[in-house]
Image (tube, rainbow, N blue to C red; front, side):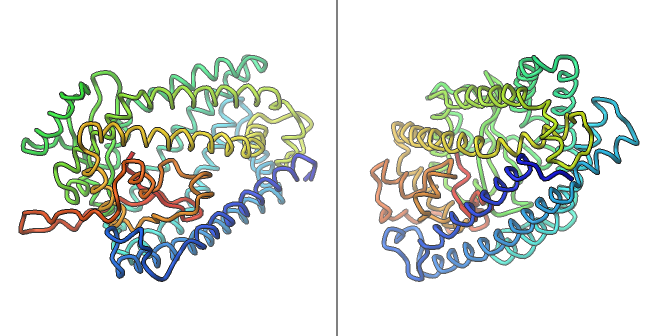
Length: 447
């Protein structure tokens, strides 16, 4: 094992990334309070706020433990040259320039899935169960884990197979052909996600005829938003958290609503969520994001082509061979590219938050401003979302502005009371949950 400059650079990147994550988590904790902040009156009551703070603390502590374990495991793998040894073992099975990387990636995907499974299990059946979010059974959990493993293996296999094949054909110009091929692959994934991938995990059924469907179709017609149909996703079989999105291109777009969203919000609020989504479409946010992602992918592939033949990258991963290894070089470069990728992600977050404001404004222009806020307040409160995150955390990691900032941009006060429903029954089974990263930084899923 050669502890060269590349090796120590990678170790430093991993360690600093972990430390910076914990700094962000500490900044968020500094904003926590035992008493209900006045700006959250009308969103939380005192008891629900106390429960939200407890959820954030428990989630944050668990994120620290799981993140520490993952970082420690990664460092041990690097220091003991496990990846180099793994390639040596697999070379006894095959040395083919495509099959060897494919087999290598398959082993890594399986190991990563098995390593993360106990943490996922604890998060689902202890933390989420404790706070009333989990609806998944153990059978569903393990079946999902198997499906995710197979799906990740297929996607990673396709990507690695394409890149390794093209690199073998033309090491100098492979990045151009790989860029083209992976762009088509990414577009294909986005196009067929709702029809092919999502049904592997959730059942999608057309929204039945009725007042809700009529309202959504009328809104789509009024805004000239072409859709093929509206579907309901049975998200309640796993969680009380909810979401909504549209998928597809051209006239094949479909609206997908979680059943928990339908349970939680009234018709006008659901229409407001759709109006927000239509705002993304009308403002061309999706093609802009895809274009930027494609440019970033091209830049990364080009930069990788300059370094992939370096023996120093291979040695840093534990190889003792005198010739460079494609797959080890690819992994080493990806780790070195981490800080650049994170900075690019920060820039994407700034743009994404701007897009969210624009989509909110679009919904408000059709008279759905208050309904959108009411819906987001319900979703965020039931999900126990952190609505007072630290500004540094928001800037660095959030793709959506915090709810209070979205309300301020729309000129709507948090003290606005939502009228009680006229129905004699209350729906209380649905929540849209927060996006939770390794620092327990949260935001609404509705985009």
